[in-house]
Image (cartoon, rainbow over all chains, first blue to last red; front, side, top):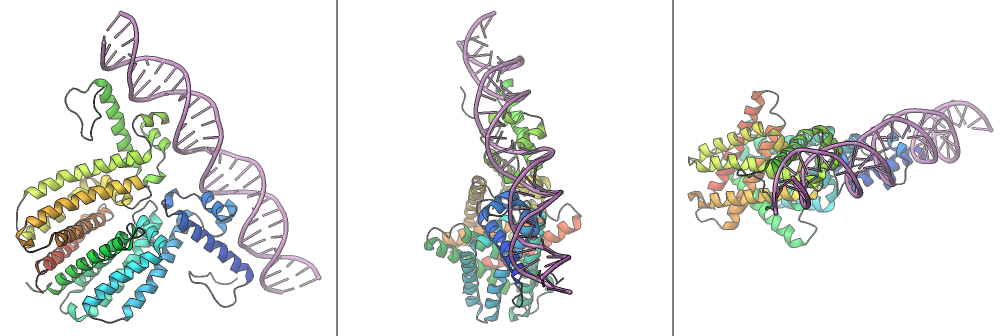
Length: 218
Length: 218
DNA sequence: GAAATGAGCGAACGACTGTTTACTGGATGA
DNA sequence: TCATCCAGTAAACAGTCGTTCGCTCATTTC
């Protein structure tokens, strides 16, 4: 009996038997994400989901305990693809002004390329399923923690208390989620609306940055 | 045949006939809000709701076309009680620092006194029912509009473009919703956590205000 | 007073739900 | 090669669901 597999695929041996199981599991996750585009998790039925991929209802239990279990898996998948993008941005070092432009562009790209994933996160962040809410809150907490670590290391944070750095990180995270949500329900139409949202978002982040630079003035 | 009644009750004649109807309608709204404390609107059943107040399922249709119709009514009810509080704050004129304290306190009080209402708003803002999402977005848009009007009249906004004033108003509204949401899932425990959230919220709003004061510097 | 109105009821409809059961048959490991 | 495993199946269980249909009978209108 091998150990349980993590969220990322095990590339090495992987018997044909487990491979097929993972493919079915992934099909469930993909179909779930597709069906959740126009409804929320608490109204997604088990039969509705298995029907979508041509699997008997009972087969669902081979992969998930219940719907909230699948929801938590979707949260992990969503933040997985997000973290890849964030890591890329964190590597770059540039002037603060350019960081803002790069951050807004990263958010726009994430929503553009992972739209169903982020729509799911936005919808279930305060949705009806407790386990999923808590999973999202946990991931966002980790995100804010990392951001606070980054911010604290910057010269602009000299003389700041750790609590104030964390306060700023929370403000940034909340606002980045708001920006992403704004991109979400205006993007599909025309690229003009997307540029307008990006324009507002950049000015808002610039204003927050100005506040940060004058935090220790008075 | 009289005209259709608005959201606010008509105090004047009101035959015993329509009075009873309104009482049943209100019972549906109240029971709905109660049941929505632990689930989302899209998973709230018609029979589940009518059973709660001891009314036959078919009776529901005398008051609402469907569940999303009831949801929109709940949105109006929620923002109705919010506007009363906001009007009270808007009347007061004080130094900016005190305005921040008063605003945060107002948000805390709103969540404390209208907890089910705001939980509903937070949950359904990006929930699975389109009509309800749009109703909430519309109300928040009106709110931001009013706030922009207030901000534009302040001396601190001298030299600001209308677009920048609106940008600031949107930032404030989004952040106020975030603050209220933070109060929501930490309030019931102990008052200490509520004071901690208020403390963070005040510093965040102070930081935004600092950014506003230096917006035209460079 | 008689007639009209309409809020709420009770029953029936067809369809859908999550979960359990015993099973089959191809991959797996000795 | 043969016994074991286990992902997926088919069927049945006991419900719940939204919606429609006449109907009743207190209130309202004339």
